[in-house]
Image (cartoon, rainbow, N blue to C red; front, side):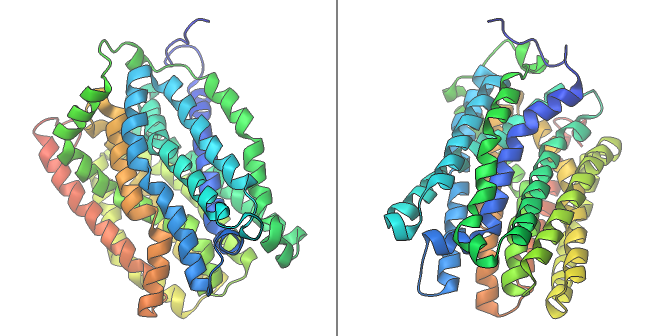
Amino acid sequence: MPHPSPASKGTSKAAMVFRVTSGNFLEQFDFFLFGFYATQIAAAFFPATNEFASLMMTFAVFGAGFLMRPLGAVLLGAYIDDVGRRKGLIVTLAIMASGTLLIVLIPGYSTIGLWAPALVLLGRLLQGFSAGAEMGGVSVYLAEMATPGRKGFFASWQSASQQIAIVVAAGLGYTLNIWLAPTAVSEWGWRIPFGIGCLIIPFIFLLRRSLEETEAFSTRKHRSTMQEVIATLYSNAAIVILGMLMVAMTTTAFYMITVYAPTFGKSVLQLSTRDALMVTLLVGISNFIWLPVGGALSDRFGRKPLLLAMSLLTFITAYPALSFLAQAPSFSHMLEVLLWFSCLYGLYNGAMIPALTEIMPAQVRVAGFSLAYSLATAIFGGFTPAVSTWLIHMTGDKAAPAFWMIFASGCAFAATLVLYRRLAARSPVIA
């Protein structure tokens, strides 16, 4: 079988973007469902003496998957840097699909006892291991196949594709709550969206198999070994850490306004399930719009100005916005606040993704990007639901999750300043 030709020749750019981002859809589709149906999953797999303890155990397992991301970033990222973007992304998809199928098929705690939470944890760890390199591999692929001068716009579709998953998942949840009684959704109906996600896995595999290798990788003369990748990552540890802090705002904001927002709306603000789902659906559409805009603006005006402006605005407005919502909870107020956060997130992330691909050494571009992103997701984003739940419980302040956003945006602002100051002398083009 002949090896696929480089991605810069042959198929259209739009077709390549669609094929490579299809795996992102599956990843975010499942992650969103896990967050939205956290209370139902808690009841099925993590029964406890009170709702807070059960919910915390569920969010802890949700976050545990993110702890596997750094390991996946190094091992699978190095594999993708060695064998190529196409082959590597097929492997990450296979691992991710295995974890998703496992979670869907597990009986509840009442049926198999402690095996239930253990197998859910295993499924989340498999998903996290795969996602550690999936996002980096897709982002690098998009950056390498981009039209010159439009890297930000093309790379932004990595995150934009995830928003489609949010919209579809929220739409399915909204429809379920119309068709089924609340008790039916709690007992078994919540598994239906997960099952639909499994049904699309074969289609995504077909799309990934038809990917073409990027010209940037195909023409590279030297392929780094695992030892060389680890050595290069070690020698560039400062860049990886600064990149991680730069990603902190993206992961925290994203999981706040998508994965945690429905639970926040239902459990904290006492909004209806339908209202919480509709807000999330509209936020997904908003994200989808703002992300390419952010990427295009960063192509026009540079990555650094956009990164600094959006992180500063988040730092200043996070608590006032959530305080406004907590004091007067309603569908319209929740929508207003989350759409504001969506704008900040979309513009920031549209610039951040291409920036992260540019600052990493070419020979470890996937591994370096993936490690920085995975560390940020493990430390900041993945535990956003658990930290937010804990902050509200400890302070009694329904706007307390804003403190986590403020901390993350402060890290991002400082890291951007330091990183671009360090890199300016080495490569003025990056700034």
